Structures are given as structure tokens and as C-alpha cells.
Image (cartoon, rainbow, N blue to C red; front, side, top):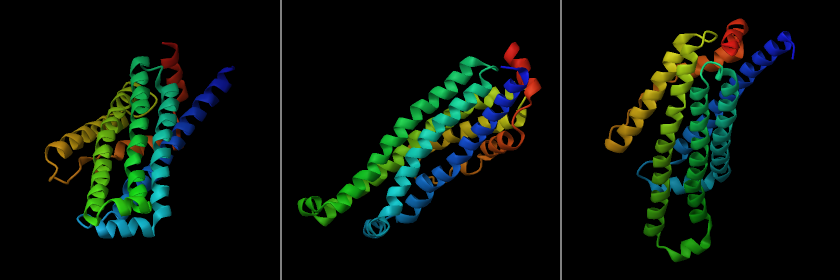
Amino acid sequence: MSPQDHSTSTVRTARMAGLAYLLQIPLGIFGVLSVPNALVVSGNLGMTASNILSHELLFRLSMVSAILCSLDTIVTAFLLYKLLKSVNRIQAISMLAFTVVVAPIAMINELNHAAVLVLLKSPDYAALFSVTQLQGLLSLFLNLHTYGIQIVGIFWGLWLFPMGYLVFKSTFIPKVIGVLLIIGCLAYLVDFATFFTFPQFDMRLTQYTFLGEILMVLWLLIRGVNVERWKKHSVE
């Protein structure tokens, strides 16, 4: 491969990583946040069940979206690994490993939402359980899904640390983005600890620390990487 082709390939990888990273945003918002928050009414299982049955396709699409988001995370990490491994291969591998862990956990967690649909749609369960028992099971699976999201959040955060480190140590992506990514990692871990220790405390730091990821996406899509500086890392 000629030097020019190699440079073009590097820029293409950066843009593909940015595009894959960008795709996580609508998939995650739709599948993990928007639809569940719109359909699940806190403290009102009857209304929640009615909402899910009335918008069954939307609920199913949110499950698909959450699963696709998990798979897309692996694609993003693999492309970033190709881009950043020249900075520190061990850190790049750990970044990729965290996403390989998070994807199956996130996908398995969607079984809790699938269980909600099975309970609501199957006449066998309606005959087997009383209304109170059925609502109790619905509450159980919905709560398990919420807890599952928080567990997934550990790895959503952990993959940001090696990524932030690699960006900070590189000379072809601004160091400030690396710092913000590491802050984002710490916010995910604090939110996880807070949720399990003080569940009544409903403020989440991750609502305010996503700037690093947004800037990372924009930089990869718009600027790509400084190829000359990237080459210096690749030959060291």
C-alpha cells in the first residue's frame, strides 16, 4: 500500500468510526431512554401495561434498537482500536474488550422487556395468575431491566477510560477530548454506585458529562485525524 493509500485508509477508518459512534446515539436514546420512559408510568402498572399493549410495535422496536446499539458499540470499538492501537496496544485491546463484555449483557437484559410482552400477550398467564400477581411479575421484570441498564452502565463507562487515555496520549486528536472521555467514565461509575447504594437519589451525573463523546464523534466525522502525526505513532 502506497503512503497516499495508507493515509486515505486511515482517514476512512476515522470517519467510519465516527459514523458508527454517531449511530449509537439515536439507537441508544430510542431503545434505552425515550420509548421505555414514555411507556412506563412509575407507580401505575395498569397504565404501563395499557401503554405497552397500545404501542406494542414501538415497544418491540425499542428492544431491537437497544440490541443494535450494543452491536454497534462493538463495531465502533473495533474501528477505534484500528485507529488508536499505535498509541498503546494494551489500552486499545482493553477498550475493545469492555465493549465485547457490554454487548451480551445489554442484549440479555432486553429479555426482561420480552418477558413483559409475553406476560401481557399470553392468555395462559392471564388465566394462571390473578391481576395482582400479574402486575407483580410485570413490576419485577421492569425493575430488573432498570437494574440491568445500570449494570451495563459500568461497561459503558469503563470503555471510555482507555479510549480517553489513548486520545490524551495521541497527538492526532485533541487532548481535551481525552480528558472529557475519562470524566465521562467516572460519571458512569459514580451513577452505578449511587443507584445501588442510594436508589432514592435520582440525579445522574451522566446527564452532564456526555460532551466528550459528542466531541469525539464530531472530530472523527469532520476532522478525522492528523495523518502525519498518526504516522509518527505507527512507526514508533
